[in-house]
Image (cartoon, rainbow, N blue to C red; front, side, top):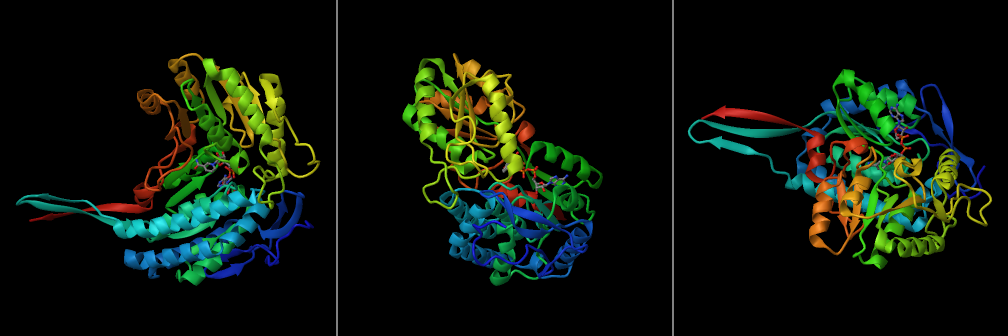
Length: 486
Ligand code: NAD
């Protein structure tokens, strides 16, 4: 058993169905490991179809018979604000568990816990501000929109920043009056187990929130194929997204897909180089590089290319790799040995595809655990695998360009289209580039800070549909049109 285990953990991670913690119907479990020791520290219930069926039945009952969908937005909003208060008051504990379970640096896990609280606060406010369309044809007709919750929402989430990403789906799904079944990622089930206590304390009615742990191909698949789950909100890999799309097709479900990325950061010669270097270091090495919007391809204008590469590599070498529990750590341990092996294999591929200028494998002093040194490859060609494929770790490819046109072609030259970052002091170029780049989100001379009212999502293989602000409200509601003759 792992020796780093935080105090006060339950004896097992269980499902939470209809207001009760429960084991799997067949008693199946799986081991959950600590990414620093790679030893199992706890067993979690491994959900299957029977457990999903129970959870959906409870959620369906809470939807059809319970008070939640019929409450006034103001009443639901109060519960959501209490959730935000509770998450805020437990942020240190949440960060401790998240950091332990996922290997995220503790300081960054704390920031993610606060973002989770903010997501609840934001949707608690938004739902009471919600206004719907009314159209009047003078003397003839009034038409209005009657917005309704849809039913049981299936929420399937990944292991990177798990608690925060769960909040991003839970908050709007609940704010709009749906009931939910959450299937968190099997690598990181620990923080999700705290939701049950938080919701109970906040006064969410029984059966509104249900949680089934387990593997994607069992619990996730059963949720996607359950006929009484009309909505699936999924965040994860693009390949999983396609499979879920196909599996949900016979049921004509509402789908929201937040998928993978290989986002470019484009640095023009006129940019503030210091700011661009700091931001692009943060953009790929924060959250261990396990970030969907990571700027994992940096395109640099030839005039400043050599200087950029030299300064960037030096700075990457100064990024502090360490124990996730240490507040000074900037890159912790990757989530799982399988993922670590995948990232390390890309580093080996990279050595044949580019010029290694920083990192390149396991950092010195870390013979065990899922540690990877911040790794930088320069002179990477656009057809290289490390330019095209999502690595999802602290590894970045740098490529030079000679013209704005070439930069745009390079930026768009992957199957993904989640985010893009542009660094230039030419305002007009910044805007024209932003509008032409194939990305759902663009940051100009800035990094990942965003207003929760804006759309969040990708184009091409990075996703389908947008969440964020009123787009989330739209996804989780039906807009029925009612027409009255005058
Ligand atoms: P993943 O696709 O392997 O798994 C995500 C979730 O889907 C897990 O809960 C898993 O159990 C479940 N799942 C797997 N197979 C399933 C199936 N057949 N049916 C139903 N559910 C299934 O992804 P991951 O490795 O956990 O997460 C990393 C990926 O997520 C990266 O590609 C990253 O870019 C992406 N991501 C995207 C965003 C975004 O907002 N666009 C945010 C975070 C992460």
